[in-house]
Image 1 (tube, rainbow, N blue to C red):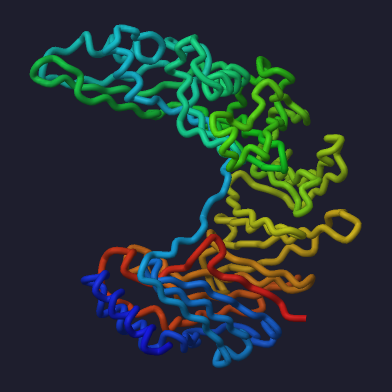
Image 2: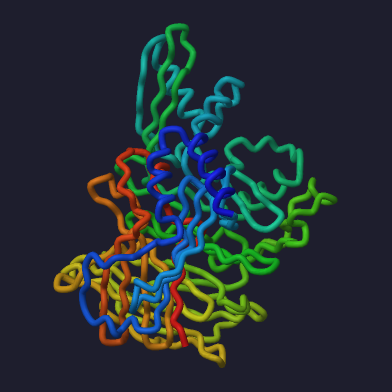
Length: 481
């Protein structure tokens, strides 16, 4: 077995070329991965019975799974695998619906070339008419002078449907296929009038023969609307909503959307996923799109997701300077609970982490001496949600850590949070060194940073030449019973 492994290693080194020194160094300790404390703050007893499992890879060929009892990292156990050909993680996830409002300049140029310069393309044509060969020009336009309603670049990913950047700007009026029909239905459903004061900057240049050779666009200094969509994908339905506020807080007009503003349901047939027999079909039922739960257009939506059993929607909103969580029964679309979690100020930022039986909203309070709080909300055995605690996890007197990409575990009283440490001196490259934080209702109880022996510090600029986390969940935390 050792001989076979050595042969595989040598073949791997030959295929990696300039990375061979790093590969040799990593191989030396292939099944003896260690975590070494670099810094520690607080009470170590708070992480008693916590296990961390790390999934690390090097160029998708060397793979380590290291399981560490955090109260005694020296007892770490590692499983190691080596492959001549890359073994890639399965990172397939469905992103739901996106509706981009930016100007697609390639489509604008196509319209001008075809002599069909209507809508936004007309603004570019007018600008082009003002310059000669070899010249460039730019202008600022009022969007409403050229289009009445926002136009969309649509993406849709659900089981059985994968549509990338369909453009309502280039609607032909002739439906060629299912995809066009479905996307036109979606585009026409969300008729949102352009803001009166929204301005865009446009630019273009001509080559020496007078042909347009580049086109640009931007939002400029004015207010603008960005359609931020929040998705929750069920067994055979996509639920989604969007925030109605412009950058400056103006609420857009949603009165022309059928049923008004709220949470929308788009049915799809998940059995078509991977079906060769129905390969020419898409799974969504665009005719079934409807509003199923009404919302006041003034509220600010910050998140939407399903619970672990996928029988409830969880809606996160800001209403009258309060952070509100609303629980909705998807079988009836009736409100089951409405929980007022905390006061909310305009400058707060947040990151929401969703697990099967709980979720955590990490709230940043920049004007309050950099305070960060974790609001932990759990679903009990009766299916009811309740606030477990709201705990301060960072301030000027306790260690700071990156809360934007963490992996969690909650045992009912303690919340463990872990992530990879970024290397500031290398453009914030994510290392495979890790941090661990543990908090409870009284606040942060422990914070530690650990050096992973796989972090070679190999000095090559490319991120590809360093060990990295593997898969959607490269760090798995678990409280042992």
